[in-house]
Image (tube, rainbow, N blue to C red; front, side, top):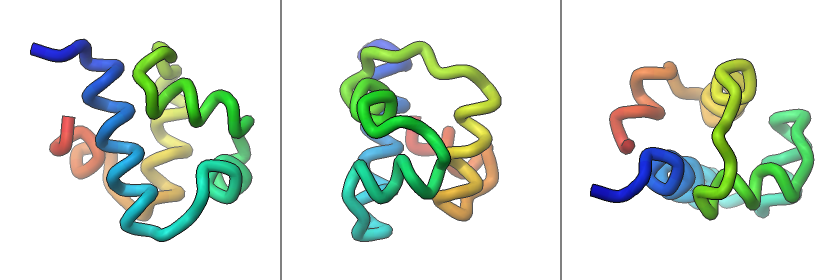
Length: 70
């Protein structure tokens, strides 16, 4: 099974694409750095819970909905 960081990153990328926004725009919406979002989407980051919550809120998802794709 793939690393959870990779699976989470893929879920975030898929949801971001559904919103139709760039990484940069999404990062701004989340109030996070663009390179940090890129690292998340590539599975390179071990994301803090507070940032997972920011991402879920920006995607208009409950945490459980975001993790259902993981």
